[in-house]
Length: 334
Image (cartoon, rainbow, N blue to C red):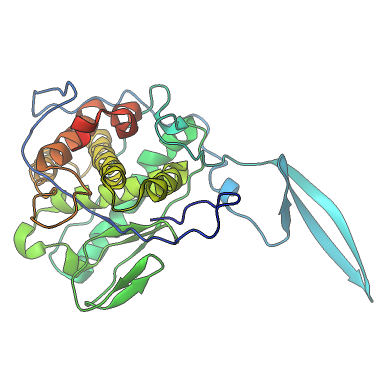
C-alpha cells in the first residue's frame, strides 16, 4: 500500500505495505443492474482522442528543470571560471496532476470508457519465457486502452514497468517474497507490475490465455488507480480507519473490486478485435472464482459473487463511473 500522505501535527505515520494480489472469480453472477445477456459485451462507442500528445512529456523531467505551481521552467547553465549564469530557455504549462480523492475523483466523472483497441498478442506458451512474451505483448494494448481514459479525465498517464521474478525468493519496494509463491501484484512505489510465473497457477489453468490476460488487466487497473490519485487516497483512508479493522478491510475490497471492474472494461474495449476473440473472453469471464472464501484469511478482496459481478459490470458497461466502488453500498462490496 502506498505510504499515507503526511498530516500536520500528527507525528510520524507507520509505513504499511499492501500487495495488490489478483483476485479472479467465476460464474456470471450479476448485480448492480448488470446486463444478463451473457455473451454481449458493451460497445465502446469511443475512438481515441484527436489529440494524444503531451501525456509522455508531462511525466518526463530533466534534471535541469525547476517546477513552480503554474509552470515548469527549463534552464541552461554556462560556466566561465567561477561564474554561472542561468538563462531561461523554455516555459511550458504544468502537466496533469493526480487528484487525491476517492468517489469524486475525476476518473469517474462524465461518460468515460476504454476505446476500441486491437490487440496483437503473441501465442501463449505455458513456460516462463512464453508467459513473459505474452504479457509484454499485451502492455502496449493496455496502454492504448487506458491512456485516452486518463486524458479525458485530465489525469496524468504513463505506462507501467513490468518484471518477471524467478524462483521463490525475490524482492520489490513493496515487500519481499521468501520461501513461498507470490501471485501477481502491482507496486505503486515504483509503478511496476510483477508477474512471477510461479504465481500464475498454470498447473490449474493451463494454456488458456484469457485467464492470464484478465489477471494482467486487473493489475494494470491498480496502475490506473495509482496514476489518478485514488490509490494514495485509499492508503490514507485505510490508515486512518485501521489497516486490519472492519472499515479498513472494506476499503481494501473496494479497491480490489474496482480493479476487477477495470479488467472487465479492458476486455470490453478489445473484444472481437485482433487476438481477443470469443475464446479469450470466455476464458477470462469464467475463471473469476477466487474471492475471499478461505477460512481464516482476512476478507480484503470480496466474495466470489462480487469479484465476478464487478468484472462483468466492467465488461458490460465499459464506463469508469460504473466501476465507482467507493460510492456503492457496503452490501455490494462484501
